[in-house]
Length: 71
Image 1 (tube, rainbow, N blue to C red):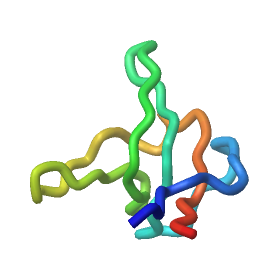
Image 2 (spheres, one colour):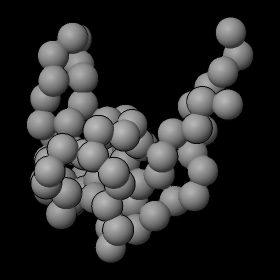
Image 3 (tube, rainbow, N blue to C red):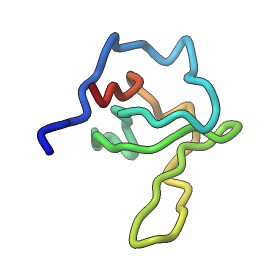
Image 4 (cartoon, rainbow, N blue to C red):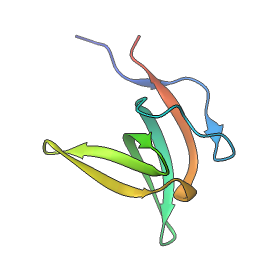
């Protein structure tokens, strides 16, 4: 299986992704930049880690994001 998630168009934080859609996020928390895969739920970014859902940050920490394309 050679399918790897890729990003289509990157968006800034002026537009938020549809809720519950998987995305790659570039975020900044305490002046540290991170890249993670998760989704937006209301004003939070959620990731699944070890089978548990965890709120990583609020949407105001997003630098940029893109939808994941599995093709």
